[in-house]
Length: 311
Ligand SMILES: Cc1cc2nc3c(=O)[nH]c(=O)nc-3n(C[C@H](O)[C@H](O)[C@H](O)COP(=O)(O)O)c2cc1C
Image (tube, rainbow, N blue to C red):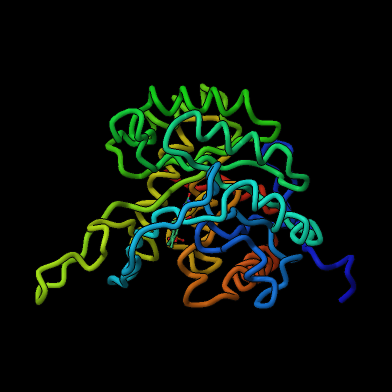
């Protein structure tokens, strides 16, 4: 196979003017800074990936234990450990630029200003294709409210980030809400170019012998196959509520899992937890999507987006 046939053209998708070679992306927090996977998979075949959440200043994260396995998934309370936006631009980006894959910088802060500070640092970084705002973390200045749970706070941050950003803005929705469409509508109206969903679902696991939570933080974020039906339902609801493109995330481990999100209305998907039990899963999902299109005479992958039949 020559370099020119490296990518299956029929799998290409476009989001906010960015062309992805295929719709399969690595999810934030499970894919490091991308480079960690360079020896495990061919990064040039990957549609793209979202970096670990980057903040204006480096953070050490929570005390261990920070991860526990649960039935069909895992709980994590890493605590947004990261090297900081500036170190990402200086140390990781120059190496990442050598690969033909889309780079999404995942951004967070503990106040609106901290988000904007991180974005300003990343604006200097050549080679970043888009930003993904993680709005599922507590806002210290507002008494610890989670921005992602408040349509007003989320819309305000989106508007500010949109103005501060030189790149397309993806906002990542929290599933820990009663009606995800309220948030989606507010954020899309505030100028988000794309919505990604879902982030992890808050959960808890208890060791009955020690009578303590299994995570030192107490609660953690649930991810993996167990959350997939919830994520598919939320993508379906949001696809019917807004006009911006969506990236589906949650428990994807195969091409068939990915297709559920695509039919529900996602343009692309991200794979998180599955990378832990199979670091090559992204490549297998790309191959599986190609095979599905070939076997079903689907000439253009985008024709599948939102093609769910409901009657
Ligand atoms: C260990 C771990 C760390 C994560 N860190 C981040 C993060 O820094 N920023 C973010 O937006 N999402 C983070 N996530 C959420 C994932 O990107 C993804 O939304 C979620 O895990 C659901 O997808 P999955 O079931 O395929 O893992 C993290 C998830 C895990 C398991």
